[in-house]
Amino acid sequence: MKEKMRIHGGARLEGEVMVSGGKNAAVAIIPATLLGDSPSVIENVPDINDVHIIIEMLKYLGAQVEFKDNVMTIDPRTADKFDPPYELASRMRASYYFAPVLLGVFRRCSVPLPGGCDIGPRPIDQTLKGMRTLGAHVDTPGGVIMASADELVGGDIFLEMPSVGATVNCMLTAVSASGTTCIHNAAKEPHIVDLANFLSSMGAVVKGAGTDVIRIRGGRHLHGTNYTVVPDQIETGTLMIAAAATGGDVIITGTIPTHMEALSAKLLEMGVHVTSEDDIIRVRSNRNFRSVNVKTQGYPGFPTDLQQPLAALLTVANGTSIVTETVFESRFRYLDELRKMGASSRVIETTAIITGVDRLVGARVNATDLRAGAALVIAALMAEGVTEISGVEYIMRGYERFDEKLRSLGAHIERVREGSPVPVGGFLPNI
Ligand code: UD1
Image (tube, rainbow, N blue to C red):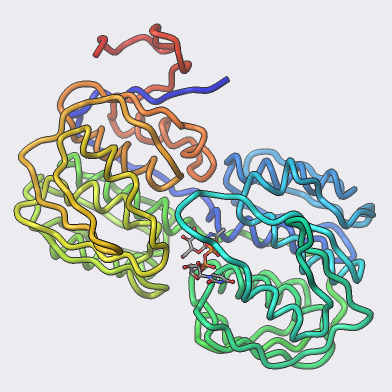
């Protein structure tokens, strides 16, 4: 059943909200449990659609999986297949993390090319190069990653850009390769460090995660483990921006403030109060925002996944902001939807020029990808009147109980059936 979100803007967010486990960490860690010779228990797993797709893939491959109250138990010992089906793999980006894992376990794999958000070209050449460097025969006939290797042997992999996906896949290949692998120009995102910590807890030797060079001594026997997933950096950031957008006062708990420094710096520059202590971030604002310029970069730079949510806030800032997207060139399509709500922007190649307006107004808009959906929710929270957002399934791919969390802070937000004029919760007036 397709749903849309209906939001009555103007409510100030106030109170305390707990961040869920990281999506991008969980989707790398869970497939990696297949590398162990005994069950793993993973805690703080976000209950999101992408995780449910991974569960279906694990079950198809023959593993036993239980998932309840954000704790997942995976018993890999019964896994006996190396060819997840297209219907599952094409539904998410991280499905290709199964390729190096299955190659390590079965010495061959057949994994359909990944799906995921349509935010511009998402090639996988660096992943294929990394796997080949370690001795795999890899090809992609008919849109399927077919790989095999009698033996995987460590080596030096030079990534052409610090790709998150390629770094994950090279790490997952390297733990099964004998000798030492060095991944140069590696991504430094918190989820890379979390995957390294997870692999170490399985018995792997991984050094340097969080820097440009990751060194892995592979070929060791890996066992099941108990592990807790790192808090979600992007959910934290989205909640921080939502709090600021509504002139709210929100305490975000269970987070890692150092992961948020690039966003906190931008919000402070905009005139938002951001303070942090231990695992808590507090965001307060008076809705009087200064315009800023933002350029997306790999960690510790400003994350591309927060470009869209922050841009929603910039639509009501005083003056003109320049947003430069250096990671995914087509990540500005959501600006067309924001324009329907009164936002003023124009895009020149990889730069968006956003001129602040006095107010946004409710409209019917469409979420075209996960973070675009988050941006529309933030815009709707600020807008006068009612906004209806379709494409909710994108938002639920990556945010756990997003509407529920915002409601607990005072937002007037509900999920209603697509095509149905009658709200399921039934408290909002018609548009
Ligand atoms: C991951 C995140 C996504 C985030 C992105 C950038 C997951 C599941 N998804 O996506 O939320 O927006 O990092 O932080 O973790 N590239 C190539 N060749 C490759 C690989 C990448 O040219 O083989 C390019 C891409 O086109 C893109 C850039 O490198 O321009 C970064 O992509 P990458 O870091 O790989 O993003 P994903 O892993 O897909």
